[in-house]
Amino acid sequence: MSIAFKAEKREQLGTASARKIKKQGRIPAIIYNTKGNINLSLDVKEFEMHYFKGISLTSLIELELDGKKHKVIPHKVELDPVSDRPVHVDFLVCDKEKAIRVKPKLRFVNQEKSPGLKKGGILHIVARRIEVACEGESSIPESIEVDIGSLHLGHKIRSHDLKLPKGCKLIRKNNFLIGSIIGRGKSEEEKAVDPNAPSTPASGAPAAASAAPKVDDKKDSKK
Image 1 (cartoon, helix red, strand yellow):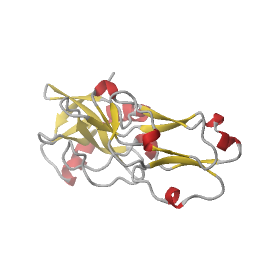
Image 2 (cartoon, rainbow, N blue to C red; image 1 turned 60 degrees about the vertical axis):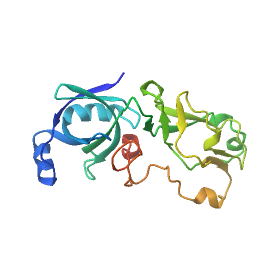
Image 3 (tube, rainbow, N blue to C red; image 1 turned 180 degrees about the vertical axis):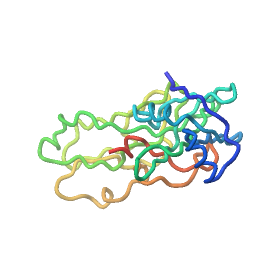
């Protein structure tokens, strides 16, 4: 079931306008759409209530604007560096005619069964989320399981080893490293920075939308 918000159109843009909106108890936002971006604002208390309960990169949201409903997913939630509260939200529209691109988190399961971990090895996680294309709203996964129950010391798991939910496929074609069971040292490949890791947001829009910054997930931002 999707989360619903009532939104108001935002005619004026810029820093001064954003400050004025925030003083009115609202948070500026935008919907990125190939048919034209929509600037809007949301009630800050209503959004924060759902945000702190667990809105994630895969949450399906329904925005009601001028009597029309827009189905979207979060693309980025910008946080205040001091208060850690949301100050701006980017959404991507869910187009029925196109695949929905999301970045679910990876859950490493069966760690207690891993022979490598039982022998004192360490689970070295390279990617904590991956980008997938989903056929429709019903196929959007909240997370994707990574089964490491059979991994020994030195064993690696790559993107092509993942069992993706029905209706989902990887965006990246190369067989990139997800994680491994390591001893005292790491291989050069494992030391490399993973481009899928949700660290600092970067610029660049997905193929199905106008230019937009990368998404920050709440749970990655909150400590």
